[in-house]
Image 1 (tube, each protein chain N blue to C red):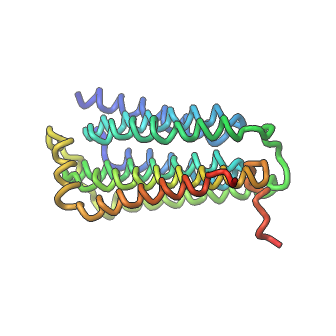
Image 2: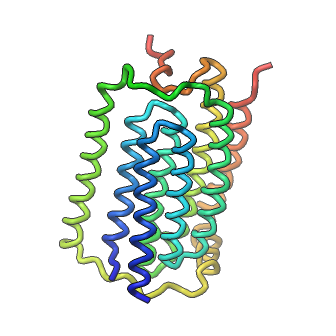
Amino acid sequence: VILLNTVLFYFLSTIAVGSAILMVTRRNIVHAAIFLMTALLATAGIFLQLQSEFLFIAQVFLYAGGIMVPFALVIMLLNRDPPARPARFSRQHTRAATLGLALGAQILFAVFVGRTSLRLPALQASLSPRNTEAVGDALFHQFVVPFEIASVLLLVAMIGAVVTAKARA
Amino acid sequence: MLSIEHYLVLSLALFTAGVVGVLTRRNLIVMLMSIELILNAVNINLVAFSRLHGSVDGQAFAIFVMVDAAAETVVGLSILLAFFRHSETVRADKMDFLKW
């Protein structure tokens, strides 16, 4: 079981990282959207492998369903630009990529310093078998105020989106 | 045997890909998608630490991050729609009407 877990982790993380890199580098925006979806679904698999089943299904519904649909819609509406050629930004392009990778290297360094100095414990054998119940319990008892604020935030975002995107008469 | 560092490095890789995407791409839609990738990487960290400590608090926070991601996408895309109506493009380097 432990070996299977490891193989599953490496399989899913290869898919996730590979499609993330492809998403950032492809010129075609529809391909980028498909690769983003693959990365998000692979992440959902990682959640399942971490035994958080509720987040797995929330990830599939919310990200792969709820967030990718508006993206697909907007791509269909707005994708009239020809594929971007290197233009005015192209000198900043390399610099920006270097900066981003430098940030990544810095965090990688922090992780490897932290693993020796923090002495993190090993992963727990398993969480509660009733994951959804435990998450719901935490949401509605311990985090009930943030939960309500999140729902207000969603309402505000919905109204704001409608008002912002509405065609002027 | 998998340890917490495996998940941290995976999350770091996705985060870095997202940051590089936001910094280098000029299409605003792809920049928003890269932000989704960044938020997703944070979620992996939260869930991995939740597993590490045997508590579901991290998973509850991951749900709040998902709510934020959804709100950010919807508002960002509607601003993008309004911008497109104004200037017929989704390129970030064309978004310069506050510059002078």
